Image 1 (tube, rainbow, N blue to C red):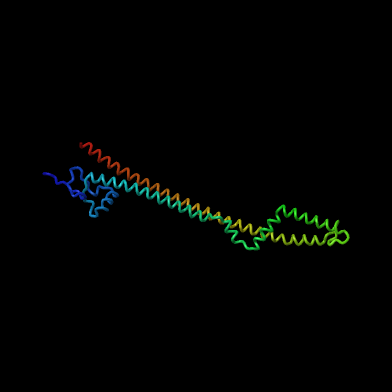
Image 2: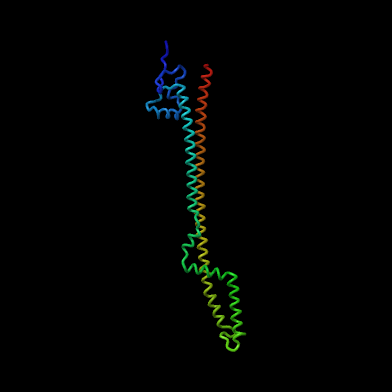
Amino acid sequence: MKTKMKISHISKKEIAKGEEIIGQDLREGIFNLIKSEYPDFDANSYISLAELNQYRRHYLTSLIIQEKGELAIIDSDVMKAIQDNAILSENIQDEIEAEITFGQKIADKVAAFGGSWTFIITFFSFILLWIAINIWILTTKPFDPFPFILLNLILSCLAAIQAPIIMMSQNRQEQKDRQRSEHDYKINLKAELEIKLISEKIDHLLVHQNKKLLEIQEVQIDYLEDLLKELKKK
């Protein structure tokens, strides 16, 4: 009794004996690919070996394209993270200077001048000039005779004013250092989180790639096994 030949669900033609493939024996990815083109294709439907090989090539191509697409998405996310970090890493000096009041600017300039060699040389030159004027130039009627009480008063007032101004500048410098430390902390924290996120993405990508590569190899093995069967028959 002659066995009835199977009909291909795709081409609607009879399939040669030994080349019929039932839907339930197909891999899930290939089965879904066929079903996307033929919605009524089910586990009991048949296709020929040649048609299966054709869909295998389509499926391999789609896997490779999908891999390239996922790599592009990862690259895009990394670039976006770097750009965001650049926004966070903008020059903090401009931000600090923008918050300084007029009094703080004066305190910083006074403190900077008071701690320079220019101030020391000017200060001692003024004292020597003051003494010289009152001892040698105005010998008969000096406006501040020895022991230079007026000079001592001026120096005392200068020290009394200069000390709190320098303290104000030091407090301002501590505030700058604190703002820089907070800014550095934010950058380091953001960098740590981004590195962790990128690491997780790379780990996920490697695992996903390994699965895809294994699936590709399995499909290729099936393809080769069928080719070997055909060669043996011939």
